[in-house]
Length: 138
Image (cartoon, rainbow, N blue to C red):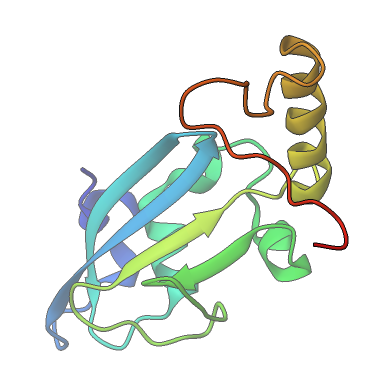
């Protein structure tokens, strides 16, 4: 947990109340880094990302990469822009770029699956409970 006051004091202001937000970054498959911090009410997603300190820890995560669309950005699963104004208890989610096309990955997994099983082993075997194919013309 990082308190924004220690990271970027200029983000906090005494005249506005503080809100708590969480920043979650998917840095690798099945590995998520989360930071909970407090920012001023009316702060944008950009302010929270700069205050959380994850930009320096995660390779490839820069303001330029976010602006260019190389990282997907959302608040509670809905795509948002860097200028989106945050509300209390919002969760900012950063998703890393895909390295493999999902359709291609599925095709490769299927091909690998076929190599493990002998040809025709998925068919029903003769015996108890097996169904016969319908006869043509009947």
